[in-house]
Amino acid sequence: MFDSRRSRARRGVDPQSTPQPPKAPPPHAPNHSIRFHIPLNGYGEVVLTEYTPSANEFARIDFTCRVPGHLRIKIDAKVILDAKVAAGRALVTGLFLPANTRVLVSFINEWAGGSVAGEIHIGPAPVQDTLAAARKLFGLRPGFTAEELSQAHKRLVMRWHPDRAGGDHAKMAEVNHLRDVLKASLG
View 1: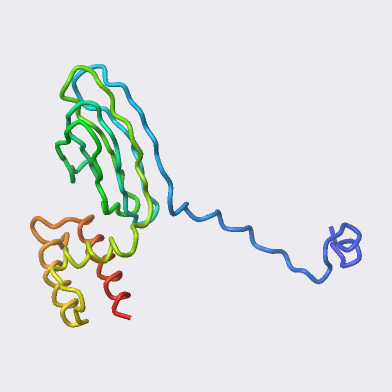
View 2: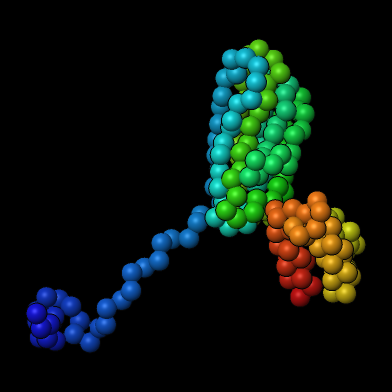
């Protein structure tokens, strides 16, 4: 059927307009939190959350357990943190989550009872925290130069590149991301 300007105008369509492509889906929310409260009925591992980031993100995990145990974080089934925590508040900050990886946060209960509760905040870390963590990883002092950054990056690439023995894709992604953060801070 022929769609003339006049018929488009009658239907309320601007005759001069051209069809617009469909809008892209909204981007992934940069910050969100996962709250949990889980009663522990016995020994063993309790999954607090499973998460797959769509972009490189940082996580801060803040929780309270009424009994001692282990906080365990796996990225793509590889344990990257297995920290013993006492009863009370524990805080894990600046944890790097590479894009499109499966992140599993769990608590290993060592007592027959109690509970674990808290909140997992996922999103960009504050710039000051990120810069401090990046300088620590790269072994740089405040006021570093671009040449020092380049040398430190090469040293870390030699250690973590996936093509080398003991290399790690997730760690390499973190190194490259933090290099970009440090480079941007040079101005």
